[in-house]
Length: 266
Image 1 (cartoon, rainbow, N blue to C red):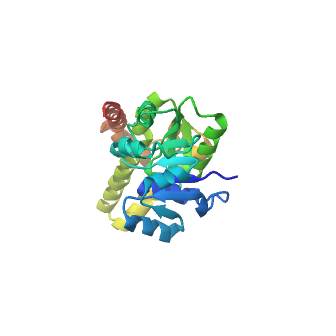
Image 2 (image 1 turned 60 degrees about the vertical axis):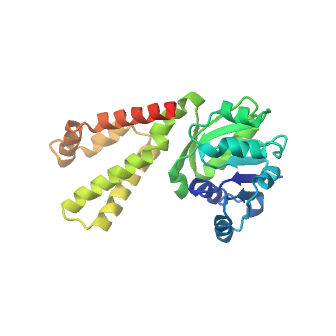
Image 3 (image 1 turned 90 degrees about the vertical axis):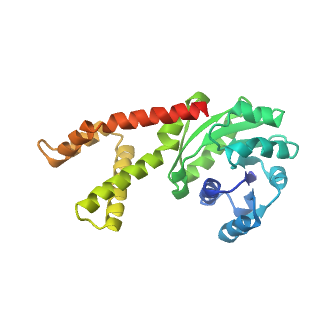
């Protein structure tokens, strides 16, 4: 028997996850139920997916065997207080909010509840997310396996200790912004060199995509792949040296340290 999956909140990330789940042949639109803050957003999602919606969070809590809390971090406490008496006895609560600890969720529910903490990043919107997952002591292995299987529908995941989520924020949660800046900078340089902007964005984006895929599919060290491009006395090594002169790696490392510190102290 398939599990019933509920989403409280269905913004950009929640919607991306829902669309990913619908690519799984074992999950139907009748297995998913969502709540939204406004009728307009609920109707839009229903029109796009055929999934039922409600404005009542408690209805979704009563429905779900696996309940995703896809609301903003500052809404977690109030939403949990609202639904705590309506969730099923063995429900699996899945959080996706940065800065919300397992212990916070346990305290707000005021009773023992199975919790899996996750952090997907925005590329989940195109089925290429990278998520971190941890869990509390009540989660059984088969329950963890089930939720991890769901995350495979919109990208990849890694099991981490909760203490490492701040580093994950810097590495994956925030890094799409760094990559977008890199693509934009490359495109700006290409425009300066005479390439039309629309073509520059396409070519820069494809180069980044292809390079990342090369790392993942070959399993080679990024430094080895870099060396393969750098011919002796060639154009690429000239560019690499200039990046190093401008502090490229140090800038990335320093930015990620700042990001992780901010995450830890929020």
